[in-house]
Length: 428
Image 1 (tube, rainbow, N blue to C red):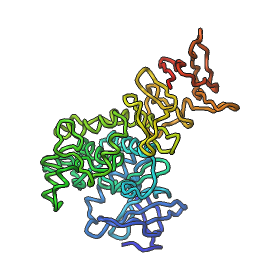
Image 2 (tube, rainbow, N blue to C red; image 1 turned 30 degrees about the vertical axis):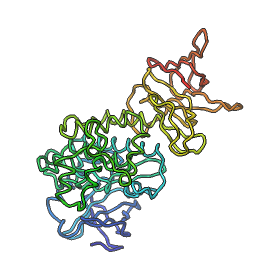
Image 3 (cartoon, rainbow, N blue to C red; image 1 turned 90 degrees about the horizontal axis):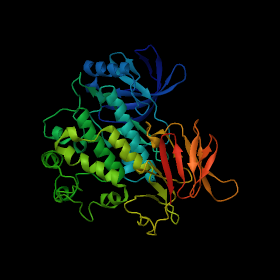
Image 4 (cartoon, helix red, strand yellow; image 1 turned 90 degrees about the vertical axis):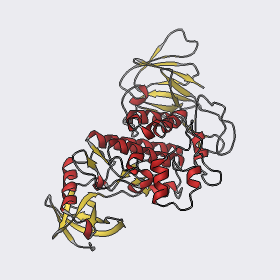
């Protein structure tokens, strides 16, 4: 393997000095590196039995394809030392932790950042599939997360496959689609969709979607048991038509609590993928459906006035109590867009194109509106950050008035705001 101070050459003609060992895995080791022009990079170097011509050719192909998104720590070059090789990739910034630490709640993280992370994961795999690629081995071992922002980075991209190549791995058992576990299919875009859903459920609910009463009855969780739970007889723990695999009290502690906290749209999409999509891969939700559900959750987050914990507003359960301190909700004002999209107006809320029917991502982009505090009074208004004029009709007003870029409109209940062809109303 490599040692600190070694000099490597790359296929692109660069020279890299090997730095510290950053981590080890089943395929090899990861080191820091420094290029001749002073750039910090990471180097993945393979164990001897992985040093094959086929693997090197596969990674070279990924280098040529280039990264589908900055969310991937993607191979950028092949590093060489005599007859051995590894690959060069971006160095993971400080502040990111492994997904296992997040799932173990070893680092503090709030609902808003959990949902943002879920949105980034969807965006990453959407970009990957747009290039005709699929990941093959989606799991919690291949993802880093910044708990302060919800930003994510996906590593181990050397396993990425396409319809033109033979998959090198089948996946990680508890994330595999049932058809792979049963030996019926190889990794594909549709199996990636299922694995991604398992990862998202673990992230948001902090339990596995198939671990319920059936799993609790197993004393030795060996290969035969895993095939039964994940392949031959997978049952969603919240399947509305099959209660044989419900979470067991005292064993499965998290999902029963978190399931009740998230908006209906999130529960609906998980139910779809783990019921209809379990047996029929073609019925698994699209990326657009995932984005819609996660955006609705992101727009519903607000903080409890008493304890500061984050909750989700749900119009079908307006009388909920805070999960942290059990006090009744004092929900902030809300903007209802086109009679269906509800955006809770927190002091730090910003509106983006996606709120008004445009395209968007978890990263947001440039805001078109934000809440702005009155310079004297403890009041908030919605400030126009777009380049277009809005029209607002306050309650009991006889006429609309224009809201030019840079101006604000007070958040009075019943105020109607026209964002071009999109209309919204302020509710409390």
